[in-house]
View 1 (cartoon, rainbow, N blue to C red):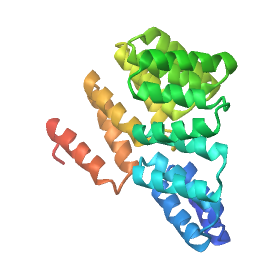
View 2: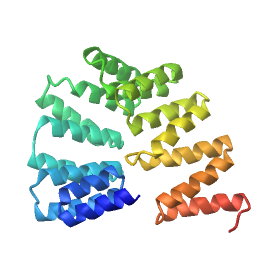
View 3: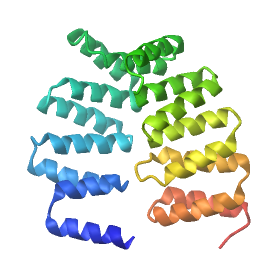
View 4: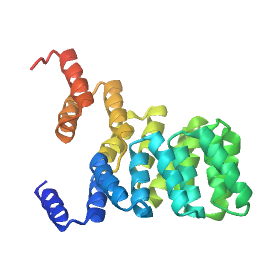
Length: 267
């Protein structure tokens, strides 16, 4: 939009790279944010804020090697409890289960009384398929903090994996009420699909993809849901909007092209 372009122009002119990368990040322009952060990191190698930024971008773009690299670099600059927990949490988010297990074990040996480790232990158990243990640990964590949105989301995901769909929906709605995150709406959409509530899944995903912070998986899940429900007109609009939003993305152009061919639209 015009307002966005004006903001970018002013930020670029001000030469404030720290504001510029945050603007790009909030707008979902992760590659642009990464470019600015790499320049900042090059000019100030010991600036932990630039490393944190690069780690956030790596997490959002699911760049596992960069996540490993920058989380270790951050700890070499700022070796504190929060950064250790953030590293383990990021590993779990991206499915780096063995790495998370090793780091969590090491963390618990050094900090046996840190209460936040219990939720990460529950998350790890879920990733390893130990669903009963994961549920037990999450419930214990919720006993001490009823307003933890991550814990409610985790419980919802565990219940979905256990096919307790009604309870999973309740848990995920509670998480969304406490903190409306794209990842929570995605988990809710997946649960609705499992419960045979396709239209409810569509509603969650349509809201999610409008959030610049939403992972790309939300868009592909909405595409699959439209296909599953046979929503051809919605798919047509979806591809048009996606191509407008990502004009240089060859993958989406190809997908839209394949859809047009199946519909007999060759223009």
